[in-house]
Image (cartoon, rainbow, N blue to C red; front, side):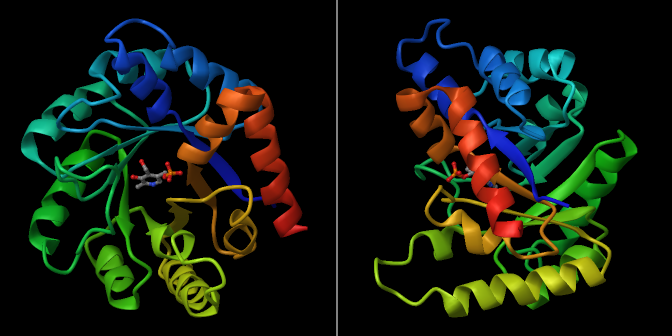
Length: 242
Ligand code: PXP
């Protein structure tokens, strides 16, 4: 079975917000990605609403036939906005206003009590919960203990390795963490910084169920169109699994 591809369309909304207007329409992008073969759509509802807005999440939930995953901080304000929108999945991420993009995974051990109650709240609203974590065994064990449904491994460290650096240690960390997570019954996802050049070795990890990829697909879509950008990524993932 091939690894599923979740397409993150945040940066379609980034472009729209650059003029505070109505174009390009992220909902249209999501539908195009879906018809090009994306298995899921992801958006990040940030506290500062710098790209995706509540209105986008509401419309996406209505029109998509693939699952919608909303990334957000585990903060009361954000959750108050997200829960009524009823996405299929919520991925809890660390978030600071200053960052350009998500920096590192959640420290699940440090905030286990808070996360446990957030997971309960989301699951009681029929929303499944994934935790964005670094590929570390103790974080995986805690994610399982506090009853997350899934973990998404941060591939940012792997993706940001300088040219010529040996990726083996970081890939080994991802492989071992994925193996443990699957053994504990967690669904296993991964993402951050993946592109056509570096996706292969991550997509080849058998326990990984889905990859969440945004920036490189939307960036490529500006040049070759979203349909082709999604299909190229699906092709690269399928090739890695073959
Ligand atoms: N997964 C998570 C948790 C993220 O925060 C992001 C970025 O929004 C991604 C995956 C996708 O990362 P990229 O845009 O670098 O593909």
